[in-house]
Amino acid sequence: MRNTISIRLLLPVALVVALFLTGCATGWRNVHPYRGKTASYRPQATMTVKKMGYTIQVGAFTKVENAARLTKKLEGQGLDAFYFTHRAGLYKVRFGDYPTLTKARTEAIRLREKGMISDYYVVSPSQYTISNSAMLALGGEELRGAIVSTANTYIGLPYQWGGCAINGPVDCSGLVMAVYQLNGLSVPRTSEEQFLSGVPIDRESIQKGDLVFFSTNGDGRVSHVGIYSGDGRFIHAPGTGKTICEESLSRTYYSERFIGACTFLR
Image 1: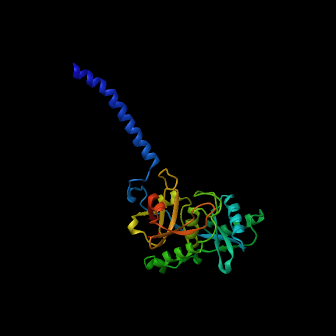
Image 2: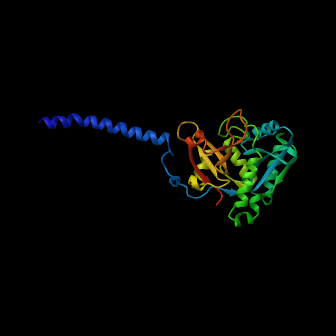
Image 3: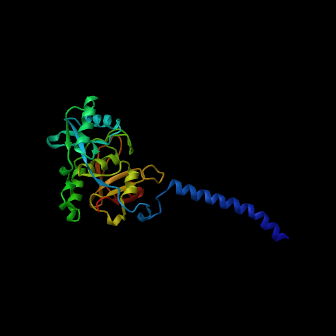
């Protein structure tokens, strides 16, 4: 009889404990969706990347702030835009990804009539690094080198307007988008989309041009991305008030917040 009473008393307690633990476990999964999991857990095993079509190039600014201002205006029109350093130290802006030359020109004319842009130039797919088939035939080493070289041209430029989301001309994921597009590859816009769309790789397998991801918001979610430049270093847009720079993966801040890596270069 005494044992029966004890069991009856313990059952509600056990049920409460079980519910509590289940709730904690569920909350942990929601708050920390990647932590403790290997790179191969991701549901997508194939890359979401394609070669760029035709894109529109505008501007020739001596001040990077003017290029950034135009980039922001174009993003306000729902366009994926970015600025970059062109020859002779000028800053230019590119936007869009159009399947045909006619569609690119039609969009450029529409924006010019609205007063958004003035003179423009349409960049054809044949002008990108990736259009050279030898870049892929040699294991992608030249392409990887070109991506890192392009990323290096952004070092020292100011981080413009906002955090790592679609709210600024060069945020962390916008830098990745810009560098890849300048070499002829289209990748997703946000850091989390980039993380989930690339082929996952282990930290020991990261090569030049691959992407490295971090959880900098303290919630376990991907919130920051950089481009691996070799020798344990990466190039990224670190935050408002700072310039784009190169950092070490072994630096405590980034090492503790490292979430994973992926590649679009296979």
